[in-house]
Image (cartoon, rainbow, N blue to C red; front, side, top):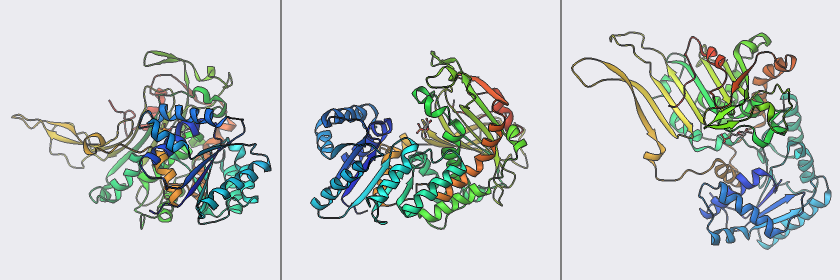
Length: 491
Ligand code: BG6
């Protein structure tokens, strides 16, 4: 892929995302020679900052969060030469005029019009302001080479997401807009496509005839921590289900796209979302469990209750846990339940997709046979395993379930890039395959809207409390009946 000179602008350069994710990702791309020879990173934020102090802050972020560990001082120096700080109010014209002068000068010097990437790492309330200013100042007016990257949350409900989409597509071409869902950049998530569509052995089984049910579980050990201000008006449904978990559902549930191309893949995923059976208001309280963590212990360290977290209302009913059962109404999945679950302050981090195959219709063995199960571990374990029955060595025909494992650790020596590395590079190369299209985002909001509406009307109805450090409210397992006794988790 050809690398053009690139000017990357980060709005919200003093924020957490820049320090934790964006700069470490750009640094790792740089040391692996993935960035073009000519590039600059314009960091824009409201607060004044001395450039050297600012670079030191970024370096400490790299040292703390980069997957490659502490930065090599010489490489960091060389990388940091490309970083500039621009103090500016997102609401003021001056900011954009100055930015335009800088980028134009950079492009004149590099003697080529290159790629421009504008990354919105800001609070959502600034998205429209910045987008309007970029448009007005003609900073992002080349549909082939200028791109904007919009972080989640993309709207807070269907209406606001639609409004934001309309706002953006009035000013930019859809192909200039990169809506991030960082789960799509995860190595193990990308591998599900390869696993499903490059291996013919599973595809014939991937349907209602052979699959009993599917569990998609993203358990987090972290609490909301310092993010209470954002989280309390969001909740797990908006923060995780509407985007990350529904995207996993799409990858597991989609039909084989006609080609490995952005539009065909996004079409196939959108089709899944549009086929999800809408919840009626009454079904919401039967098929969706919401929970909130109370005080407890995580790894023997006391953990506070959600309601005691900073910037969280003392009587908050915001959910920090969601489990739901949904169906995809199409020929492939008719009648197969998909169970989704996510929560914070849980026992430990564990993101897994479990495909539970049906029991054998004809039994010739006396033992209790455990039906086949495919386990795709996304994080922190990186593996795919298949559970099957095997004869225990000995003089009797005795069967036990065993696992056939593929682990990244055993199979590869390569280190895994961070999701943001893959995604930022894709933006520079103009590849939108792993990004959300407008209709996809809206279709995902449509799936969760009946739940949001029912909960809004009944703010505390059936809110279940669970102890920090547990696997969530016990009733969440009832959802699985009669398909499974409990949520599958790694030992
Ligand atoms: C973010 C959510 O999108 O994803 C966070 O806002 C969540 O609440 C995070 O913790 C999880 O991402 P990861 O990559 O750590 O699984």
